[in-house]
Image 1 (cartoon, helix red, strand yellow):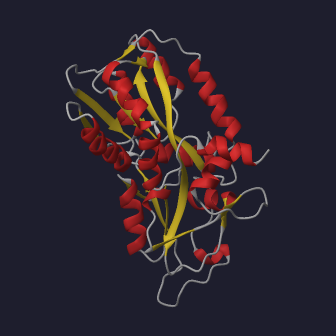
Image 2 (spheres, one colour):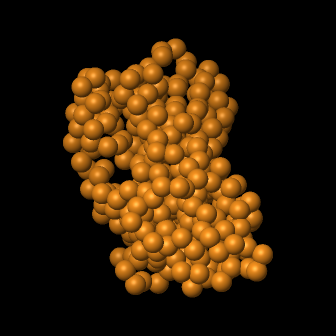
Image 3 (cartoon, helix red, strand yellow):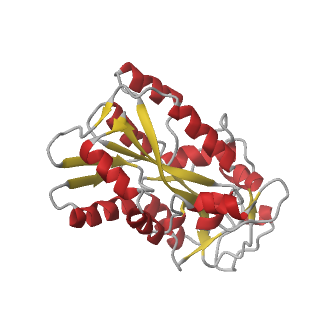
Length: 298
């Protein structure tokens, strides 16, 4: 993902009107926050720490997927929707039909990592190979087709681990790897949560899966990814924001209009140095690192 694409998407959303009020959907001292499973761990950490800063404000966090959170924001049942993808045009149109002009807030960046079992000898993979594994018209079903010789006690068959279709990670991987008109091949193991993907890969010697970098652990292997004949790039917080890792993305929070009151105060705190240290500690790149990366490249 090129940073210019992120900026273009951000600029297009910023042209939306701000007629809807982004204050608390439930009034009082409660903030409802729902959506992306990629973001749920850091969202829970934010909520827990914020309760120490503002003990009179309670933030309720739940997952369910980016699409679920965005739908809840459009329907007025949550104050903040977490998303690991940008809103789709049809979602923006639906929101406008409800008298809501959604506002996008980038709260961090993530490298969408490719995971395999720790004993898999693969050293790198290309976007084209990933498309051949996951895509509807892909022909790769065995590790040997990629020149990988699996350990003698491991089957050669590739076990595809994916996400359910309400996931922003599912949508982003499809659009980036398979193309906006691409479709997934049937027969994958489609899981509900980001952690579930990594846990399943850890226990399945022939598996491959994709999930947020923050879910990495010492029991799985992260595979560097290359594109267009370039050198393979490992997923890190730095490569997520400098554009060198090809499956990287911003992480979003959406509000129904410009946030006000307690919701604005909470978002301001999330984007403050204190809030950004929390997302960095969880394995994501904080907002501001993208600016630093751009300056370093000049």
